[in-house]
Amino acid sequence: MLRKPQKPPEGAKLKETADMVAWRKEFEKMKTDEHLQKLSQLGLDDEDLEEFKELKSGKRSLEDEILGNGVPAEEAPAAKKKKK
Image (tube, rainbow, N blue to C red; front, top):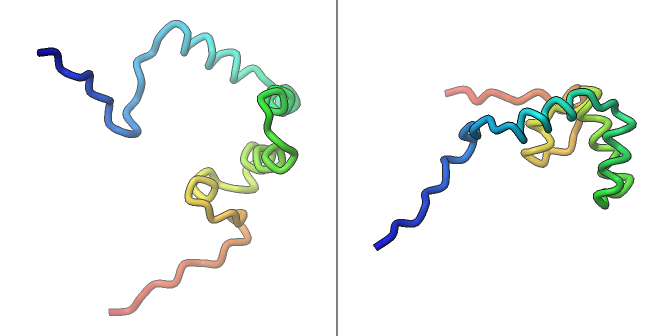
């Protein structure tokens, strides 16, 4: 019997292939306008492009975006600590 290939754990670093290295170099050389143009070619709307601009400029943290808070980091209320 053949075993199913196991998926790497979520968040595990992928192997560095020649394609990945070439893609990363191209990605790092791109300017914001080029990124926006590529993203619009992929079908992202204006709202998505604005979110990308905010992430790129640092107005919104990636953690907030992933968690779906949608509130820029500087506007988010401070977390309240519970007393025991």
